[in-house]
Picture (spheres, rainbow, N blue to C red):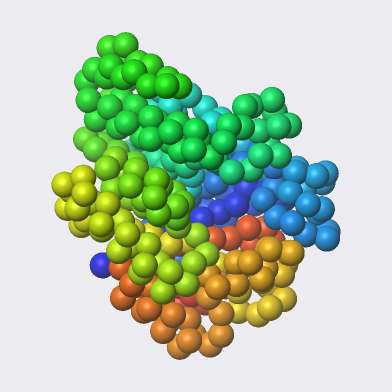
Length: 307
């Protein structure tokens, strides 16, 4: 059965607005809510300026808001799409998600990514290595958090990080807390997902591109000897019933994300959803950023009879 969720951006908003939004999403019948991990706003817009430039720097920190999301809801899965492993030591992330799992009563998911927004790294004095090294870090992080979350004791030796009989106690509430890998890179990202993840997420792609990448993930699963059905597949899509709404949400990035934005009539949106499901999507998340279009969420939920 397909799950429908909402991925909530943390830029140009308030904590009161987010808390109210999360409660509303849960009441509408969605099964998942997630946050992103950025230090600066991830929109290029004439109102806010380019990414990382004032006042587009306005963005809440992810760990604190992930914990708030866990406390503000009672039913939905609470995820992160995705934490940048370059910002936090993987062992710290394992401890973070364990605490959030307890706060949520066992509803937490941990998403990991290699990171991409160099302006944030540079501004905060965090090294931004070449993409190959960042992918190496992602692979190390996936192994480390998998051990810390699922095993009693973890020893690991990598190029960037090491663990020496490390324990993560108390244990998560869930016996197996899901680990997600985000991104569409076919050579490294999807292989890492095949080998270490419980779920894979990619944003703003067409059903055809999603189907292709899902097949590549299947191939990687076969190569590492894993059942492809063990990796949950999800896509983040925009929702904009009008072009005005699309531009309000994404600004100058509107045309770039348009291939992965739902629009048109209710029937057209439902047909498009069916195409993603046919392409292999187990879960579809509506990727929202302020100004949050609550009417769009309500209309989508009503069309799918979520409540």
